[in-house]
Image (cartoon, rainbow, N blue to C red; front, side, top):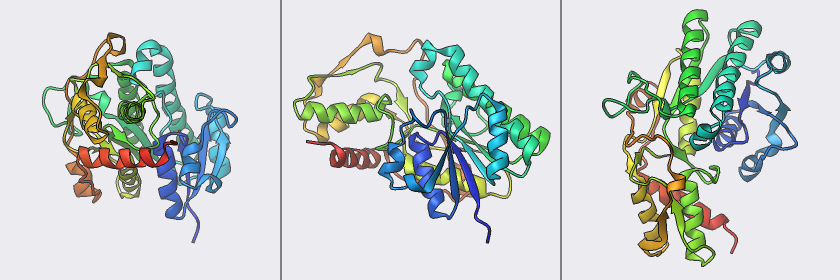
Amino acid sequence: MTTKTAIITGISGQDGAYLAALLYKKGYRIVGFVRSSGNTDLRGLDYLNIRDQVIIEECDLLDISQIIKLLSQYKPSEIYNLAAQSSVSLSFKQPIGTFHFNTISVYNLLEAIKLIDRNIKFYQASSSEMYGKVNSLPITEDSVLHPVSPYAISKASAHWTCIHYRESYNLFVCCGILFNHESYLRNPNFFVKKIIRESIKISRGELDKLLVGNIDISRDFGYAPLYVEGMYLMMQSDKAADYILCSGKSAKLRTIIEYIFQKLSIDKNRYQISNELYRPNDIEDIFGDSSKAKQLLSWDYSLGVEEMLDLLLAEELKNTHL
């Protein structure tokens, strides 16, 4: 039996690490694309004990010639594109760079597939942020897109690019529309990770207050290690399609802070609102409906937000040095 090869762009992020671990268990040969092997943080792969099982290749996704060369070399059966400038806040400061990378990289990958081997399956990491100001909740795959940030606009453009290549060139292209999904490997600038890490510091007397922005908005939060299973299932389907992965419920950010504070016996007055952390525009409430993924892919997800927070807090405490 021939070993399947999967390429993962954005291998250094939480999704890349958990997906690599899953694919390794499935018997894949894994190739991870990074911008620069010398400057890329691969601690997620080390943490999951799969660093030695991943082939790391430098690849500038804005240079299609590099992509073509590596696809010809490794002959992948699947490509998971997780690479992006993924910070909503940063996108307001760097809108042009965000749009340029998040769209052109997708065009280059799809064009390379079209030129090299149209049988390569392609997964695109789309985002719930694309929906923005929605008319009704929950969001489904058919909801109207109304992005409200440069990041969301770039993701919406890449999303429609994928649909175009699927419909025009009959490529196997799946878009996973993931709502917020968290893990111990989450980048520290993301909300839940920041709240847990800084709350632990407050509980240990290492930090006085938790500074936050708008915490009266609500988001749909899930557990990343289970979401990457949904990505894998999409690529094993007979027919390419787009799927929402979400918990199906939203939680107010203020409620998350107060839950973590309660778990760590921190006084409720130890957080402070900072106007500097507000975004120019934000979504008030957003949650999705993952019925399609559960029915057609048999994706199994039932964790509530408190169960997820308990898992994250326990893992953070286990790995935080005293």
